[in-house]
Image (tube, rainbow, N blue to C red; front, top):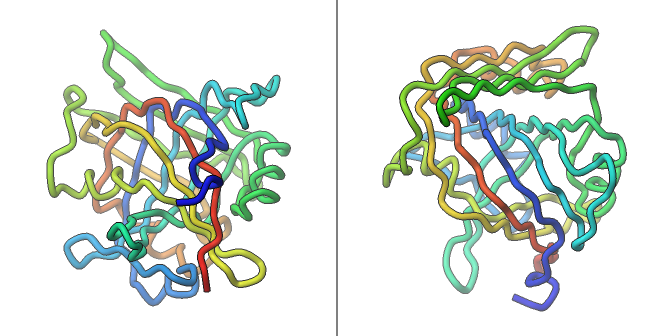
Length: 244
């Protein structure tokens, strides 16, 4: 890894990550897989996830930007992997990322070509005796209120080895296709999270209108799994373009 890949680009806390996971046909995602990567399957299943969370204490190159430190994000992501010299690197590719601030979306698009958009957003987190009971992330789009809702069951537990939750949470690389056809790779660092099982989880949105008709059918079904991760401090390192 060269010096660029070792320099921190962004530090923050990601908290209360509500993760709703759906099975989808690989053929739908094939055009979205960046050059040099391949789809990463879990037990033969191809997953796509809608994730809502809080972005807190955000700093870019160590600088805190007023009114842009704390905000919501809801993203749609798929899972890929790349064979590197040090073995398989398991990562995510974002289909769309929603934030409430236009400056955040513009910066992410310009620096990383990430598919950010800015929409009015809100959240509601219910905490009781130190445990998260529910998380709601909402946004305005298409002339309607959209939301991601998750209610937890029990208390947070360590990730179970080999579980679907471990597969979804334990991806530490990001990949995205660049306008010139190359692929940008960047590393995300955080400790292993504890998670809550979901008692109920629902995505209430115009998925086809927001993400495209090819995703509407899968995202209109009940999630095949869902959980809430406690989150932690994170570091995103500067990206590097992969050799063609």
